[in-house]
Image (cartoon, rainbow, N blue to C red; front, side, top):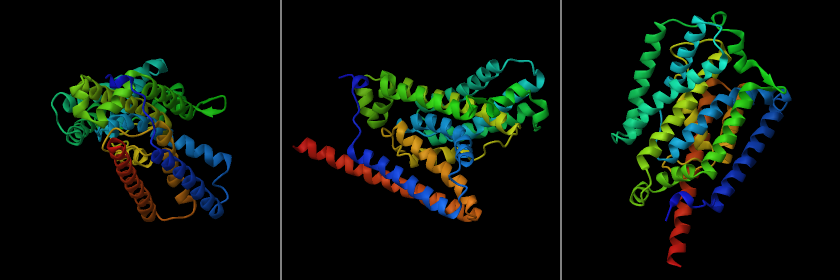
Length: 333
């Protein structure tokens, strides 16, 4: 049997979870709107989408890594490194075409992802250990190539900064980029053999290897894709904030993982959908935007976000147990 040709069916409990997440988002939005009538204005909704666009792009890559049962803690460092390399290139020659800069950033991130993938797939190093080690290496390289200096707005071309500030048909470029990434990877994950094999490797690594799936190549691929998306995010980050620093995106990988968990992506692998991921990112963005609007202190903001994430993890565990129980019953019948 070729697992790559199997059609995945979404369990009822997972569909119910997404509906519950939609209801929760609506409920939270209604409560916040009652506290602050500026929340559901078009301007603020546009701010939420713009501010979560980079998070959205990274979450797609992290979802694929999590689907294989892995994790990547180096993406914050990759964002900083690819952003710094691109910013230094712009500073050296502002006439360089923007598409070339984009390719440079993506390739830089992909190489970093390849290094992680090789450590995990070829040398069987635990993903958390491999990515944690490379996180420090890449962060150190960022300071080395920049010599500890910043690249500021006046050292960047207007066309480069327009990557994040410009608009297409009135929609911010960051939002447009995030939508294109979602559409591209929705097709890749759901309608290509490689995409379906990613689920197979995460669902049952031993069985995937027995039936002949290229497990090592698939694992390496997801880390390369994660790195490439982190490289793209690095370019957009620097363009958005018009500043490249060595400590850019420190700890940001936690936000990305949290968004995936909120969206129903299983940290144990094999389970997760783009539709759920979108809802998770939206919820995370709403919390990050709305809590300051209703004057919640920074300490309580972290506590509330942590509580919601913990609730999502518990929900994922309960859903997995329910799905496993239903599977066992079907086999007994």
